[in-house]
Length: 413
Length: 226
Image 1 (cartoon, one colour):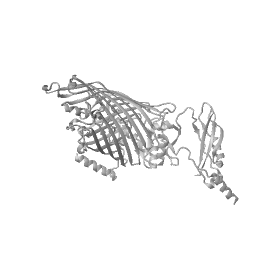
Image 2 (cartoon, rainbow over the protein chains, first blue to last red):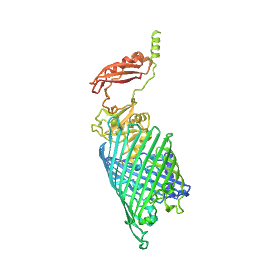
Image 3 (cartoon, each protein chain N blue to C red):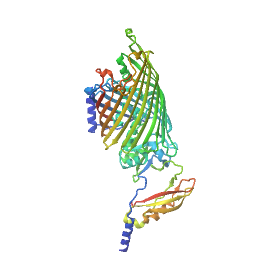
Image 4 (cartoon, rainbow over the protein chains, first blue to last red):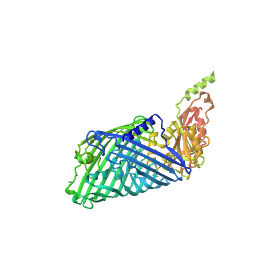
């Protein structure tokens, strides 16, 4: 870990002194121009109380690293191919297991109709497909009520296909952009949900399934205003092993769970005017699973929304703030209901996280930025689905409020 | 003495604020681009990577400047994004697998040379820039059934009497266009009166696209002594 930080530090010093010039790199291959681009980020998080996002943040944690590299080329006038690999470590998650982030064959027939196939980033709301790309935004962490970084794998990509396009509407009515997709989602076993349920001795070997949905966004005639809506439906199964709560004497047995209903609705708006940007999003996620080999059912109903504003003060300095609200209710039936009461009260600390955030972003040059961000959280949302605060790293229980300082630097080329 | 006085008087009346005519950049393209015109809507789609083809089926590749006055003017006039917002937009496309990054250049010479040698390349330069080896495309305003598109424009001749004074100025005209697209009537609305005759003479030769009926539009003609 120390070597990685030192290495990143050396890269940053070289960038600043101009010893490395980061440009889009390209080379010729069989008379085709192939481009490659990359990015990396390193963060540090300190919290005054609870440990957050599986990191040991109450002592200060730098286990907050990610990087990616992509290549792409235009094979014909309408056909493009590319791929990106990605790796991350976030506390107990990721653990530097690299993955294929996306690998796409894209054929654009017309501006209003194109198809993509392969492993494709999922279009959901304003920032789902770009949530890893720290350099593209002001905030170090997107609002966790909608874009939970510990649950990135749940929505980031699908292996399948998309149909997409942009339609110009008549008489100054703006443009409509649509995406419709279907495919298979496959979460890393080093992601939030497998880690959460490992506290119950469950070790998942696979977690994923069918995912299909769509997105429609309207670039309105009011200059700078975009509004839209997204929907995902999923049919997820998980397999692994664990010690059954209803028959512990049997030892480690096979474990499976599957979706009864699993969907996400998201509504959003984005307004850009001059140096200002204002965003607002609302997401509702329903996670209704049959768990523990058909013995129990858990229904987790989460609702999150945020409003954010950013302002570009100078060419090199940007400021931002957001208010994020997340509420969760839990209901259990079957065998699990004996051990877990229903939790419908979102006013309790275990039923919500309200987060007030302020951020400053400094661009040292076009390729390198630094961010300082403060989070002031009320609540910790303790549920059967990950909410950012995990019992495994908070063995003494959770305090109702958490303040966090996030420092982050990222580079891109 | 009398002529100098006359020139001073003319100069005094001719000292009107100059208004730059819309368009600080011109669109240039490789010779493989067949079109002589491009709509503002198409141009925006090309540079937002939403299409690689013009309406006539020609393949196009957008090429950008990295900075500079022409770059800022182009983004403001045609793309509705500033440089930072455009780079963020390109980043979202490139790093999510939706597009490749357009080429960009710092130097004018390299930029024009690349467009001249690259099939389908399309870019922008300032009005005064040298454009050897590339063609210039006329930009049509956003599509609107009632709008009359200027198909042929004749530039006004700078009045000889004002040449010693090196004055800039504008003339505002109301232009009545027939259904077929010819200029039927011109009325001077305001501006520098010493430039009006030359402005009217030029606009009388303009040709517009055909429309359903007679249309009246306003035009501002700028005079630059250079």
